[in-house]
Amino acid sequence: MVDSTMIQTIHINDLSEIKQAAQEFLEQTQGQKVFLFNAKMGVGKTTFIKALCQLLGVKGETASPTYSIVNQYEGKDHIIYHFDLYRLKSVEELLNIGFEDYLYQDAYIFIEWPEFALPFLDDYTTIQMEANEEGKRSLHIQLKSN
Picture (cartoon, rainbow, N blue to C red):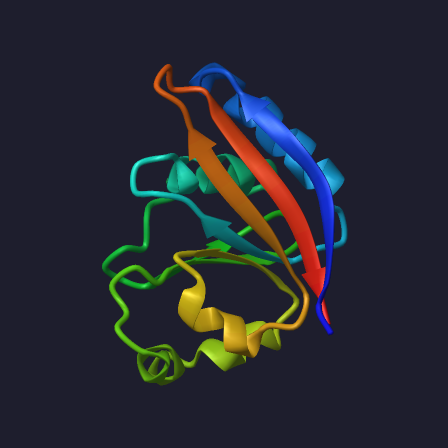
């Protein structure tokens, strides 16, 4: 049985609030390490993950792993893996990049387009991002565990 608990919704009125929203997000999800980001293209998944990486102590530039599938960053206290699974066509492709090995590390794992990763995950936090016509964004955060 899967247990789902809504943690909260965070609102971002414009991009100047993204760092504050990322800080609030980290406070609300303390102790969690695996995060699944669901949203339409262009809503701001990567931008929000970049803000999270900065707050977790990543120095230097972070970028979307759209073509590399995964980027690794050194945070203050943990390694951070940022996956973008948009281009994958099957679970087998995910296995071929050694996805399961990443899960056994004490690292933060941020996954965009996570559908193929779900069979490998027990405990994770899902973030459903939405944007309205004015560019305001909402992050609906839900903790899931088996």
